[in-house]
Image (cartoon, rainbow, N blue to C red; front, side, top):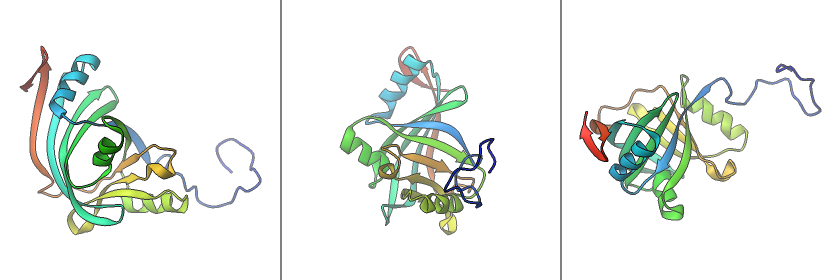
Length: 186
């Protein structure tokens, strides 16, 4: 076995089922009721002055049911880690459920990958980790997947893949700057 350790009882000579080396930490997702207030608060507290603000809508499967989900997402950079504020406005999905069950707060850890999402979630299934939400692109390509928090000790993990976004995914886009407690167009 690799990794600099001796083989342990129960180790098998099979391909490594983990996602290590295939995903890279990208962001933490925070569910919010009012995205503009959250941009101002996090902007002031953490010094995030520039936000990329998007309204999106996409087809998805949530807990096995097809539906349309949508919301506002604002992304700000803290060096190599992004803060992703999410205000759900359409459909039942992870952010909406987090708000209704627990209120505002951290609700996922987001990773990016350069490989297709489908084979990664197949690996997760082999490890008994389910998928709560998948975002669907053109020809049902998997744009992203949210692994089920119930299988990961209460932590929701998002994996964002390389598939291109459908033309109708982004409904609006703005670059905003926090200045003096106000949001201004960049």
